[in-house]
Length: 229
Image (cartoon, rainbow, N blue to C red; front, side):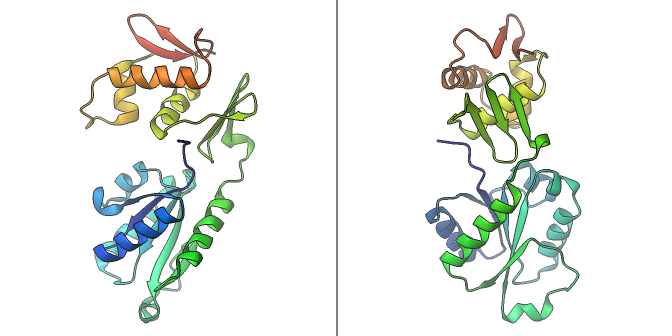
C-alpha cells in the first residue's frame, strides 16, 4: 500500500449522505473516512490531515457552518494544503453566502463521475511540489505535498504511519527520540499500543528502503531512534 495523497474526509449531518459519499469515493479509488468518527472540531479535523474535505452544507445548520468557518480561518488548512469541496443542493443555493470561501462546489444530487473529476482537479491543483515541499537526503526523497517517498528515483510503498514516522525523523535529523516520544508524536497520547509498535514500524521502514546497515535510521541504544545527518 502506498501512502495516499488522496485521503478524503466527509463531513455531513446526514448519515445517509455520508454513507453514499463514502461508497462513491472509495469506488473511485480514494481512501475516505467519515467525520462522524472523529470529534467535529477544526483542530481535530485538521489532525486527520486529509487532502480534500467533502463538506455538506445543504442544511445550513448553525453548528456545521461554525465548524466550516473555523476550518477556513485556521492557517493550518492552507499550510497542510487541504482543499474543501462544498456540497449543496439546488434548493439550498438561495442561502449560499456570496462571501463564503471554498475551493470548489458540487450540487446535490451529484453524479459519481463529476465527483471524481472535482476531487481529481483539487488534488492536481494542490500537488505541484515546490522546492520547500521536497526533502532530499542522499538518494532518499520525500515529497511532502504528495505524501510520497522515493529512493534512487524509485517510489517506496509505505503505509501512512510509516510515512509519518519517517518524515518526522527526517525533518529532525541528528536528534535522537525515545520510543515513547515517537509513539506519542505519531500515534497520539490516546493510543494504547505499546512502544513495540515503533520498533515494528522502524523495521518495516528499514526493509523498504534497504536500510539494513542503518545508513539512514540509526538505533540509539538506551534511547530510541534517530535519522543520521
